[in-house]
Structure formats: structure tokens, C-alpha cells
Length: 379
Image (cartoon, rainbow, N blue to C red):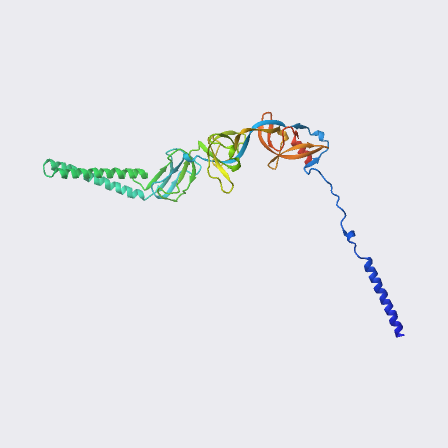
């Protein structure tokens, strides 16, 4: 009986194991069934092309041809003419007690700029008063010596010694008086206050003193610097590869970033012989009279003109789209498509046309009104 029960249990166990093995084999994963479906890739010949409805709404024009010399645009900064800068110095050391002018002020020659309390005046005036006393005593001795010499009481040599002492005392008096004058003080009304006046007319472009600050005689930094801004310098950075565009003595077109509608002429007066070791640029200096609009530190765009004539395209100004600080035009493609192409623009030409320096060639067709097409695409 026991043997029979064991046989039944063994058969049951084998049956369950067989069913489990069969189930596992039937549920085994198929690698090909787990792979993703094949991607449906849509190929496009030009990623910059797009299509619009009714492309005939956007007329196109052919780019014209314009002959002009190559140009180079460089950014420059306005600065004062160094040869027209005059430092304001003080020959007396002391403390500033009054300031009558500030940085950026326009001053006239002889105008009071500041006042300094200086102990140098006390010493100079003391020497002057001693020289006055010595000169008076020497003059008296000469008069006495003349009387004694006339009566035979002294020799001619003693008279000459007295006259020499009087002459020396006169030299000392003149020297001490001149020192007071140089320091800015008078001999009639001595004072410890020294007045500093403007040596020339112009604009104060540098200030190194404040109220109660100390001033050292004939030492840097100078209290003020006055610049004549009737003529200015414009310093531009020109890359080494573009130095062929600049020649000494030639003129460049100058446009102020603050007044882009106005154009001026600047003469190239210097090309620095040493290049910047990091950027490989040369400093190019333009000199020109100040029309009254130029201020120190202003940015300008200087355009240098080459001598070789080149062929460029020209399109209507409305065909150029200014977007994200760049210039673009739209080119028509087959099947009602358009393509936006970046271009490098030049000057505005006659007839409200725009010079295209790079990006398209003469004869290529462009959309006449790029802004209308751009607005249609954005909608």
C-alpha cells in the first residue's frame, strides 16, 4: 500500500515538473520581437528650405551688379590728442582747501582751478624779507663808503667791496621775489594760500585731487589735465591680415555709433609698428577736427577703402532682413519653397538699394520684401 502511494506521488510530481518546463519554454522571449519598429525617416534636400502657401504673393527680383573698391570696417574709440594735453602742476606742496573745477568742466586760460595751503610760502617769504633787509643795509654801507672814500678815510678797494656786496644783495632780493611769484604768492600781501590757475583753455579730462587731499610739488600724478578737444584721435584695432586696407595719409569714413546718420573723414596718421601679441592687431590712429559731437570714449566705426575694384551684388533695401544682429535675404526655390541665406551688407546705394558684399552673387533672385515673408512664416 505504501509502495503504491509513493508511486502515485512520484508520477504527480513528474507531471507538474513537465508542465512547468513546457510553460517556460513556450514563454521564452524572442529577440526579434523586442526590437523597435523601423524608423520612418523623411529626407529633405535642404534643411533651410521651407514652403508657404501661394508663393506667388511674394515677388522676386534679380540682384544687380555694383562695382566698388573693397572696404574694411573697424571699431575705434575717440580719445584726446596727446599733443594737445596740458598738465596742471603745482610748484608748492600742501593741502587742497578749495576746488573750483571738476572733471569734464570746460575752463578758460587763467581761470582759478584750486587753492592750496602751503608752508613753502612761509619759508619763501622769510627769505624775501631777509633779502630786503640785507639789500637796505648794503645800500647804506655803499653810501657811507663813498663819503669816507671822498674824504680819504678808506681805500678804493674798500669802496669796491661795499659796492659788490650791495650788488649781491640786490640779486638775492630779485631771486627771492621771483620765487614767491613762481609759487603763486605776492610780495605785498604774503599768504599761505597758493592759487592754481588754468594754463590753457580746454576740457578737464583727468582729475587726481579732492578736497583736503595732499599735493606734492612737481610730482606725479598731476592734479588736473586739460585737453584741447578741437582735434581728436580715433584709435582702431586692425587685424594683421587686413593691414593692406590702411595706408598712411589716406582718409577713412568715420561714423559715430551715437549718430549713425552722420559721416566724417579722418586721416590715417599712424600705424603702430608693434602688433598686439594676443590678437595680432595693429593700432591705427586717425586724426580729425572735432565737429562738436565727438566726446572722449565714444565708439565709432571707421571704414577703410581699398584701391582694387571688386564686383558685388546689389538688392533693394526691403529685400534685406535684419534679424538677431545679422542680415538675411530669401532665395526662391522650386516647388514653391524659399530659403533664408545670411549675407554681409555694405553701404546704402542710390535708389534705396543695399550693397551685398558676400552671401549672394549678381543675377541671383531674391524676395523683394523679406519682412513680409518673415511675418508670414512666423504666423
